[in-house]
Length: 470
Image (cartoon, rainbow, N blue to C red; front, top):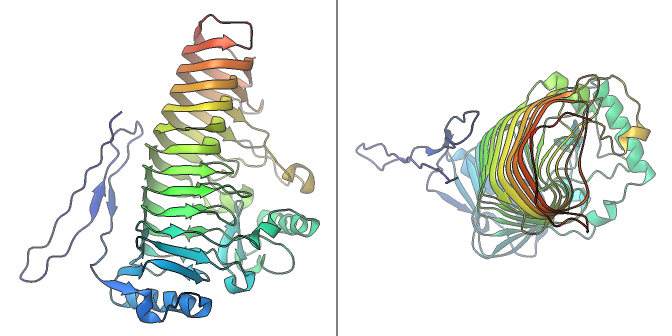
């Protein structure tokens, strides 16, 4: 399917300098409709960090320079906070509205890995629960018209953060405490996870409750935790990124309780899920009542990752109207398209279509699992049972060289999965089993082909028509 992007730039032809208006970005191919994104155009004013005292090798001066440049840019009505070529070691960067952080060619943001620099704590989240924690390395809260752009590199120091990759008992106890506070709706300002030995690593990029967000053209190498986290944001355009992060919990982009977003022409090479849709966890998300919706992901390459597209397991606020197409993995993923939830999540997953996607090797081409609890199964109890409604999920046009199985669906008998279409799927070799499906209704397959089963079958097999759950 051809990519359709329309850029509509206009200027006010008055008796003074013309002012650029919004850029319009469209995705008319979405089967669920996708209103045009009206993306902010930043004024042609630059605020180089060197003007505000940034010095290579001086963490304190450079961190302060970013804060001063952001403040000046915001006060002047907006523009670019420019990072010149060179390696700039700094602490956290906090955005202000109408600011575009521009990474020049040859610029490297080399964030220091001293946790003390990332205090005082700020409002953020940890695996679907809101809290106060160490500041993300790049952080925005309740901003509008913000961006990171340019060809430069974000490459944080990782030596210290890697010591927090393990989950010792103190960390487990802290996550148990946060889980209990979120379940009982303790005010977020009282959930202080920077205290003690919780060792909850900060996000690399965390934009929280922001509107009109642009991320374009820069490179990432390594991240302490989730790499790009758009949390309760609206109207976002992510394009042309090159993201590499193979540490613990290094998702590529987490889109959580975020609405109206286009992700395109990006490369992700991850140690965890690549493109991930989330919507909060349990009672916290039910109270926020903000679904992730109106999402288009197109023309992206996932070199490696646990999933090409992952949904959940934090998805209690609901996820709907999602279209991914023409995305491919050049190496391998665990699962091409994966929906995961559990009996504590509630919420819904509905109206999702993934089309024209491929990878080389994987465990499953398509999988739904309604009993994914990870470490939470044993460390915290079920406070309240709430079954996830899963409806109208489509995978159309998928290719795999080798997979253990074509599809596996494990629905919950209390509210079975309903409405699955698997169409035009080709697998070169299936090494374990064709499919396994329980607690699913209205599962339709058409044009699924497998060249070879295990080591003994060489003939092409075609399976079409209705496939009842079993």
